[in-house]
Image (cartoon, rainbow, N blue to C red):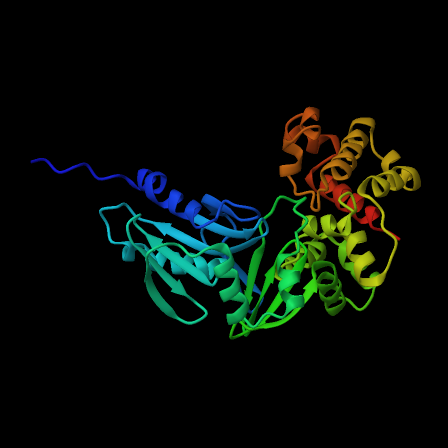
Length: 351
């Protein structure tokens, strides 16, 4: 007698695993299931100021206690394979995401790994959201205040998932609104707002606003500053969203947070160059001047941090002035074009 056909992984998920998660309450009230969830940024590992990014990965399921608080990962296998075949991958994904609970299942058996206790167990059913939250609070010894902060809704204007940055001797887990500093053993040292964390890091790198301005006005130093802040988990879009200033220039945003300086929008900075530095623009022939004005417009609208040559010449509206060589010719040569663009960026950040 021919044996019945085995279900593939997608069918196993649809027939067994998703209904089991729903039965445990993972699609009720504020709880949710994220299927085939890509955590594209993966882990950033920083050692001696050098960062490397691991490949993007996809989890079969991520279980969210609230919209902004993932708590467990589930790895699925086909029903004809042992659930244990997926446990190591589930543990790896949970480790990358900083989650304390990992599950592997083929729809008929469930294996749990609890990072809080180090215990692996075979289960008859998935735990409920409240059970996992209770275990997490107990295992991590979370105070009422810390628990409230963890479950506080995040501002997701930037549309980005929380990221984790790992340093020698410790790690920093960054959500859109809060930063959780952990020691080398993964124990929480403190919780600080992303804005305050950003201000601290800026002040640790620069003694004052004018020192930061000097670095920001120089293209090479500005790129290095951006890299240093990125290595420390600072995402300009997320910081601007939390501060309620999505149109602020990153330089002004950093100065505002770190040194209590007033904030200018990118458009205000661009308009100020056209008004107060008109002599700079008028020194160029009409079409070259229009190209520089288009760069200012692109900066004001898109928030370009770096006008990278020749890439920026290949996108509208700059590309409408001709190909790269034709645009270079309008400035009298590649060196002249480079100097003009660097001077434009310098003028943007002049006091």
